[in-house]
Image 1 (cartoon, rainbow, N blue to C red):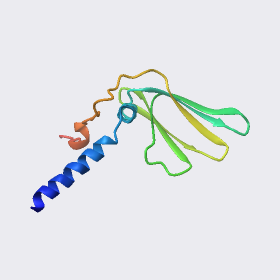
Image 2 (image 1 turned 45 degrees about the vertical axis):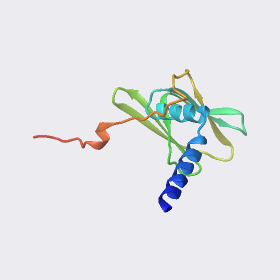
Image 3 (image 1 turned 90 degrees about the vertical axis):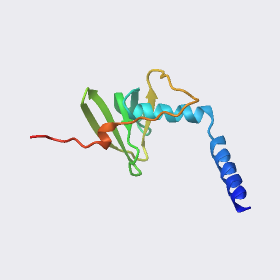
Length: 128
């Protein structure tokens, strides 16, 4: 008798978890995944609100830091086939930033995007 109740509760939990996803959320998540894999050209502009001037502009295949501390921002950009540059920026009360996606990207609002990178799983072995 307990088994059908458990299965029913599990089914209700799954349906409620999946019902919270709409097309915009899935497309947004897929765009973020594409940008984190250096597939989307972005322009990041740092702006001083007190003096109304641009402080810095970074443009290219760039990913924003996902684990930055409050008041900090890291930007990693792909500048060649296996070349990257990372910038660390401090944000203040007067400095804010805007990230602009330069070109449209084809992402599906119906499917999640999963990126499998075997190099992260299989270690880089050096044979002598």
